[in-house]
Length: 66
Image (cartoon, rainbow, N blue to C red; front, top):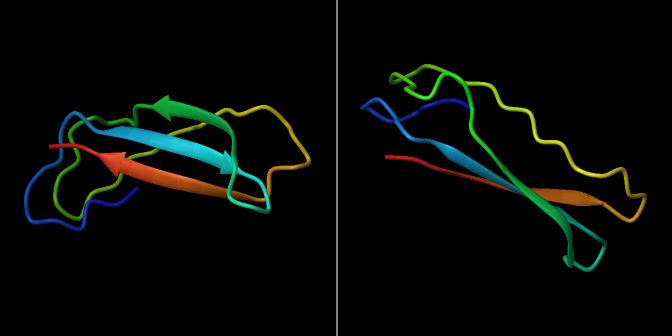
């Protein structure tokens, strides 16, 4: 994830939802990227682990921080 803002991001939490063809949520998880303080223009990595389900067609990812 990339911080495109003008201030450092802190306390970032990423929510990941796995969706089927109809947009129905089949699985979800929350993860915390590293590093937790992301400077402007900086990046952080995260890994989201979800079950292997052939019905999963797409993902919805949302990052919230302060």
